[in-house]
Length: 224
Image 1 (cartoon, one colour):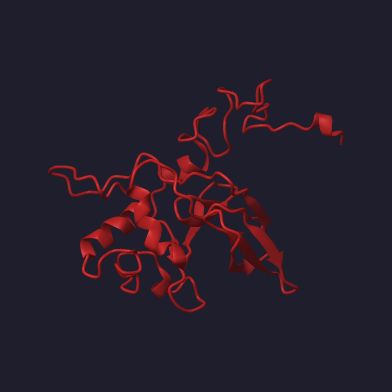
Image 2: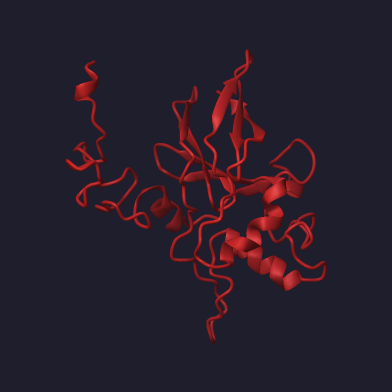
């Protein structure tokens, strides 16, 4: 194919960019319910995440190789996830709970008078600046997109539905998560582009860098 004929198209199969190379205001991202153009806090995977009804599956690597074990859940119920690991004072149980809720997408630092139910934040998905998404096809016809974001996570999304399959918070970033609620300036977390190595047994190992550093982390995923 002649490279001059290549074009980036949106969900409507029309050119996503104008003559100046900017995203058109009339373009529609994949997984969006409506035209979102160049509005970064509207549509796409972020919209799907924001409208999610089921609890999110957020994990970390506190202990052991089984990341899906209870001891690696990023949840209030996981007592292994201590205030100290989250960069808080040892007895700050309330701060721990609010931080975990915030990472899950709730506006836990805002007190609504007379209301006990937590509300979701206006936008949950962190900024994706330098991380280039990686798409891996699986034998069951499902494809998964892996991408790092500056919300402290490497995300895995189902490419068909846009649903988040899981979010992984690296252990050494646990103590920095409290920065997410401190001001609007971007903090760099999982900002590197994921790469994949597929073993002879079809096991997928994902490598990526974080915090704009050259150090690499790896995560074993299910077979392709």
